[in-house]
Length: 117
Picture 1 (cartoon, rainbow, N blue to C red):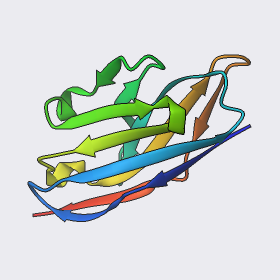
Picture 2 (picture 1 turned 120 degrees about the vertical axis):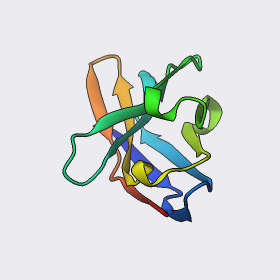
Picture 3 (picture 1 turned 60 degrees about the vertical axis):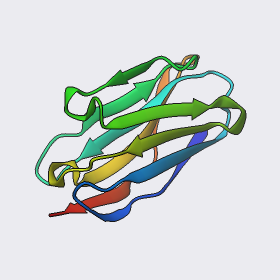
């Protein structure tokens, strides 16, 4: 079993920055992709950014150039640096980890990010 614990959400003005962290606990040996998804009120959960175990990132078009995902495998942690935040970035952000064997997807409890105008 894997537990994901997120840190770093909060309230920020448009144009500001926040950094999210997600620490993985438990049976993490076969964890591959880790990353972040978000869900705004009334909308479906969507990919924000994910990283392979070797650090290859994938970003949603809406955050490219503003958000940066990084991983520290020694600390079992994935980060999301969010710059130039927009009001439309307001959502609950969920950490995600995909176990390779046996295949399973784990989710964190979510952290609220609110961007005010």
